[in-house]
Image 1 (spheres, rainbow, N blue to C red):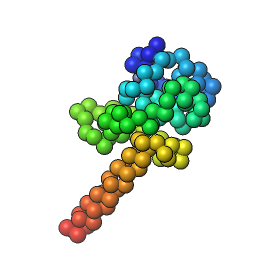
Image 2: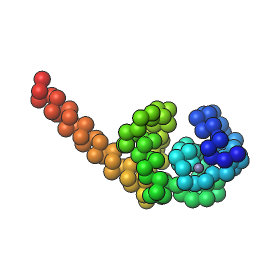
Image 3: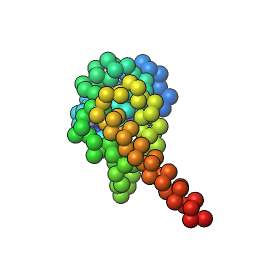
Image 4: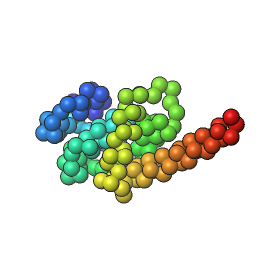
Length: 132
Ligand SMILES: [Zn+2]
């Protein structure tokens, strides 16, 4: 099975660490698509850095070429049909794995963008308040 055929939305729901590792190891991950990136982020909550490297062959959160796919997944970049399940899950997981991937390109990008988002929300709140 390859990364595109895998039903990722069923993955990591109620699996133990060993079950998850076994399932992930049964898939051949290309390492360069949004499905791989999503699986990597899901797995990152449960597996060690060594296990992740073993399964995916690389730290996918350090691949700058996945930034567009990442932006679409977390909602920084608008798409016509966003996958809401993925968006909610990834936005929940990213803060939880922040320390583990503090030096990774996509984590730094996520932190910066979230901060910008937060600041513009604050500004909007302030603006709305002053209008009422
Ligand atoms: Zn892939």
